[in-house]
Length: 142
Picture 1 (tube, helix red, strand yellow):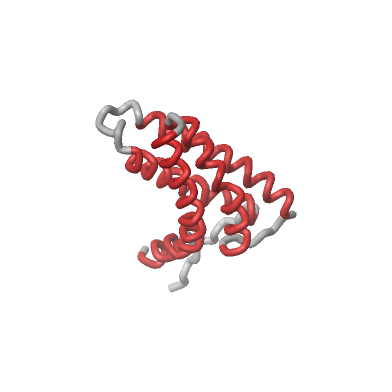
Picture 2: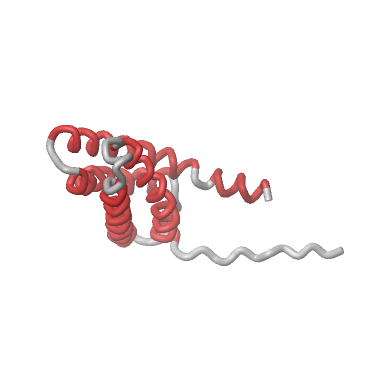
């Protein structure tokens, strides 16, 4: 059980680190836009989109093994990112309906980012590496 938990965490560390860079861009652009220029919905679209291409190249270099053409992986990655953008937008705009959270942009964006993290990890792993073979359960003989 503990070994499975460690493996679960270890495989996400490089993804988390590259995602941290992209997330920094996402957060910075979002907070700047919301503070000075745009409402949360459009700010989310621009901020999320600004980090997507950088994130693709970081993931390609440091996280996943590319098992298809770069062009195909890029197109599929952008499609997955579009799904992540939609999910991010739904969470951000949805959380703004709660009066307590309405003025706490960083809490709202952090919640959305945490949820989208897991969606992105599993979807992007599929994009880069394709389908993974099922894990065989080891049966130990007595």
